[in-house]
Length: 327
Ligand code: CP3
Image (cartoon, rainbow, N blue to C red):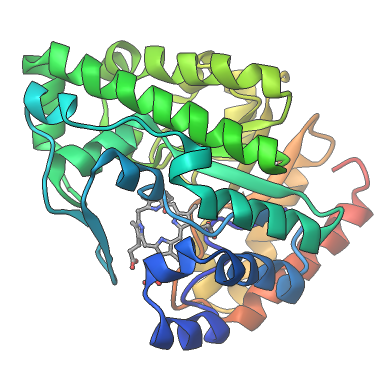
C-alpha cells in the first residue's frame, strides 16, 4: 500500500517547509526532495515512496514556462496552440536537463534501503491538456479542438511527449526507482472512441518503450469507468482507478492478468477514522484472494486530511492484510 500525494500540505512538516521554499524549490533541490519524499514513508509506514516532484517538471527544459500556483495547480505563460509552438519545444535529456531529479532518486533509494521508490510522469494527454489550455480546465476545449481540427499538430505534440515521458521514466528507473506510475489524471474527460483514436496509440508506445526495464508499470486516471478495457490494452502491469468503480467490478471487466490499485475515496479520510474503517474493510474484503492488488486511495491525499487518521488507515490495512494473508 501507498498513497498518491503522500507528501503534501496535509503534513504539518510540509506546510512548515513551504513557508520557506516554493514548490519548485523543493522539487529541484535534491536534499530537500529526498527529505520530503521519505518523510511520509517514515511517519506513516507505507510500503513504498513516490518521488516528490510534479508532472510538469520535465517540461521545463522543453521551454514550457509554468508556475505551480497554490490551490490551482500548474499555470503556463505560453500555451501551445499551433505547429509553430510545438516545433519550438526542445527535447529533453534527463541526465543533462533534470540532474536534480536523478540525484534525488539516488538519495531516496539510499535512504530507504529495501522500501521501493515509485518514479512517475504525467500521461501525454494530461500533460498536453495543461500545455494547450494554459492551466487546469473544466471542458478541455482547446485540447479537444486541436485533436479534432488540427490532427497534425496534435500528433506532433503527443509524439514529443511520448519521448519526454519515456526518457524521463527510463532515467528514473536507471537511477534506482523500482516501479513507475503514469498519472493520466484527466483522460476521464474523453469519450472512449476519442481515447482510442487520439491517446491510446501514444500510451501503448510508452509502455512498449518501458517494457525492457522490467519494473511494474502502473497506469492511473480519474473518472475512467468507461475506459478501463482500453487502458489495459495500452499494456500496463497495474491499473489504478478512482472510487467511482468498485474494484471488484473492475476485476471482472479486465480479467486476472493485470494488478489493480485503489481506490478508497480520499474524501473519506477527511471525515475521520470512523468513516474510514467500514469502507476500508469492505474494500479489502472484496479483494481478498485477488491475484494482485495494491491498496491506495482513488486519488491524492487531500490537504485537509488529518495525518493521524491517515496513519490509522495504514495500520488498519496492514492488520487486515495480514489477517487475510492471501491479500
Ligand atoms: O504523489 C506524491 O506524493 C508525489 C508528488 C506529486 C505531486 N504532483 C506533488 C504536488 C505527484 C505525483 C504529482 C502529480 C500531478 N501534478 C498530477 C497527477 C496526479 C493528480 O493529482 O491527478 C497533476 C494533475 C499535477 C498538477 C498539479 N500540481 C496539481 C493539480 C497541483 C495541486 C494544486 C493544489 O495546490 O491543490 C499541483 C501542485 C502540487 N503537486 C502540490 C504537490 C504536493 C501542492 C503544491 C504546494 O502548494 O505545496
